[in-house]
Structure formats: C-alpha cells, structure tokens
Image: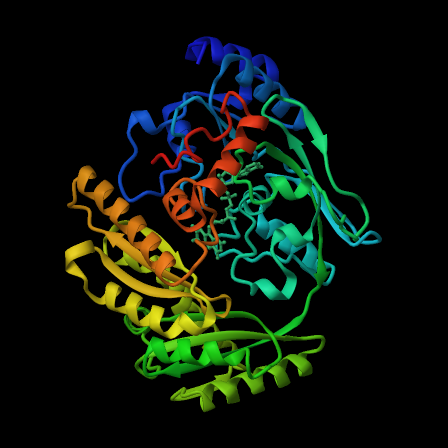
Length: 472
Ligand SMILES: Cc1cc2nc3c(=O)[nH]c(=O)nc-3n(C[C@H](O)[C@H](O)[C@H](O)COP(=O)(O)OP(=O)(O)OC[C@H]3O[C@@H](n4cnc5c(N)ncnc54)[C@H](O)[C@@H]3O)c2cc1C
C-alpha cells in the first residue's frame, strides 16, 4: 500500500463525494463482516468504507487502488457465511449499496439493475407483474443481487428447475481490477454459446472484477402448494428424497428438512404438538393452483409410502405458517438460548449417499464432544437440493482464541465430510474457507489455473486480497 489513510480518504472524497467516504469506527465495523462468532478486532476492519454511486465512480476508485496497490474488498450485504467480505488486508471496503438502479423490461423478458439491489426488492417488483426471480436465498431481505450472482447461488431452489444464476444472467457490466469497464452478453434471451466472458465473472466471488450492473431473465411465477411430512428420523427423510427422483414425481421447487433435535426446539418455541421426529417440507408448483395442488398431493402420497408417520398438503394457512416457522427457527434458536453467534456448514452428498451423510451429521450435532464440545449444534437444510447444513452456536464464555480454533475445526470437518461424501462445497461460494477443500478435491493444477486467471486480470492482487489464498 503506497499511501496512508488520510491521503486515501482525501483522494476517495474527490472521486465519489464527501458524504460517501467513511472512516467512522462504527461504519467500519458494520462493513467488516461481523458474522463470525468472535468479536472483530481493529485489525479486521477496513481503513475506509466507500459508497460509489455508479460504474464510473467504481472504476475511479478501483483504478486509484490499483495504482497505489490498496486492497479493495467488495461488499454487497456481507451475509455470504463464508466471510468473503471480511477484509484480510484492511484497505478499502467498496459497498455496492448505491448501485440501486432497477428496471423491468417486460417486452424483452428481463430486468436490469445495479449490483446493490436486494433480492427482496427484485422479487417483490417481479411478483407484482406475475413473474418470479430464479433466486430465493434465506437472507433475501438484505442479500444483494450482486452478492448472489458473485457466488452463483439460486438459494433454496432446486438447481434443476431454473438453474443457477449463470444460466439466467444475460449480461453483466464489470469494472476490472485495472479500472476498465467492460460489457458482456446481450439483450436477447438467447445466451451465447461458446466463449461468453459473462460466465467468467458469475461465481468469481469478486476476485476478478466488481459487478456493477446485471441483466437477468425472469420466469412466470408458478402457483405453489406446500406439503409437510413427519418421519421418525432425519435419516428416513434422506432415504425418501434419494428415491423421489427415480419415482419421476412432478418436480418440486423447494424441499427443506429439519432434524429431530432441531424440530424439538422449534416445536417448543411455537408451543406445537406435531409428531416427534424429523420434518420435511416441500413446495410443489403448477401453472394453476389446481395443478400445484395435484402435484403436492402426489408428493404427500409418495412421502407417506416412503415411510412418513404422517404427511399432508398444507392447505391451512395457520399450520403452514407454523411449519415454516419451525424450519426458519433453525437460525434464531442459538440467540434464544443465549448463545453468541453461530457458524453454519454445508455438505452436499450425491443422492445415494444422503441417508448415510444425514446419519453422520446427526451424530455430530447430537454429541461429538471431542471436536466441538460445548457448541450447541443441529441439522437442517435444503434436502431437495441435496444440501445439508449443520449450525454450531458458540457460548459467550469462550475466549477469542478458543472460538477461532473451533471455527477452524468446524471448517476442517466440513472439508473432510465433503471429500468423504463427494460433495461440492456450499451455496455461499468457496473463498476463503473452502480453499483447502477445493485444493484437495480438484488438485493443485486446477487451483493453479484460477490463480493464473487472477494474476492475469488483477496483477496487483487488489480485489478481495487473501480470499483466494484461503486467509482467515
Ligand atoms: C440467514 C441467512 C440465510 C441464508 N440463506 C442462504 C440460502 O438459502 N442460500 C444461499 O445460497 N445462501 C444463503 N445465505 C448466504 C448469503 O446470504 C447468500 O450467499 C447471498 O447471496 C450473499 O449476498 P450478499 O449481498 O450478502 O453478498 P456478500 O456477502 O456481500 O458478498 C458475497 C461475495 O461476493 C462478493 N461480491 C458481492 N457483491 C459483489 C459485486 N457487485 N461484484 C463483485 N463481487 C461481489 C463479495 O466480495 C463476497 O466475496 C444465507 C445467509 C444468511 C445470513
């Protein structure tokens, strides 16, 4: 870094205006990615937070940072759970909040927007017109489209319904690490075959450029009907879902599950009298409500035949709310128990390994004091997409060092499980914590290719420095 904080701030203010450059300690904490279970320290904070208002201002900031070799961390809403927005080398945190332009072009069947627009806003605007966004993350109220596209996640949705963002993004505007702006893609709903630079940046987790604008296809909003099924064990849910595809049932949009222990706390929190055991919820879709209902009935029948104690279509709005409440309670629970923060991991086994993986994860979350003693943990996830989450909640009493060590142990555990079950790492991207997994699974030649691409586009390694290196 060639310049000090004072000079950096002066230069940045000239580029984006006084009001949009901030060195206030609370603002720097807000943009430091504080979702790790342990408190942030001064060394974890960026020197300055900058909020450019358009691609040209982003380009100015990045060009300047490149010239002065200042690290730049791009920040959407900081919810990625793999801590890609935690600055590893201080410098500038570049927020996309003011890139908030949004426009629906119904004649063209796409929308175009700034990278900082939230998933909830886009979903709301599309739904008003009878369309849906092919992304549904649990963090939709805060998560930005730029963040979701940068990690290439479709969230809860089954991958094979609409595909990942890389299948639906028609174009991105990128500010390269040198400050040049490039456009990719087209206005047609037909995506290019062969070389299409857009694909290099979707899923690049911010290491190759800053996405400033996104054009994306949308779909007619399907009618949906949910079902719930109660099983004696979560492992049985694994068996049922592993079989579901072979039975060629009407495809579901979303399939969620909550393990035995997690159900128990959810039922307690809501004062519910549901059958003991584990719970699966599915969302069937159709062009009309009647289609969706027919499809949901087939799923409920199938789940009963596959061993559910009870399964039914969720026609009663109150019960539907309670069922989803139990599922969503998964993340609130740690806080209710007075625990300090949490860390979630994800294992995505191929279908035939689902039951075995669930059995092992359930065993881990129910005990395993040797590894994660004292954390409260439980299991839930997007089982329809073969995505199993363990959530570990940390007690307040632990020292920072102990928390850091346990965080490392937990990521190691995730790596070992994904290697063992041939998983792919999570919805939230690979960098930085899944770098060891990536290297072990795909080998040093593959990892070396990504490093070479990074070196080619970002020779001074300014964008999200430390993430590709796997730094904490
Ligand atoms: C309660 C909760 C529920 C969640 N549920 C889900 C879920 O169901 N499915 C799922 O996949 N994820 C989920 N997540 C993880 C996360 O919310 C999503 O991955 C989300 O899409 C991230 O968006 P963001 O705006 O917060 O991105 P950020 O966390 O800000 O950024 C993510 C990465 O992309 C980079 N980046 C961000 N914007 C840009 C840009 N414009 N250009 C270049 N790089 C950029 C960042 O540097 C970082 O590396 C959940 C998180 C929480 C806290």
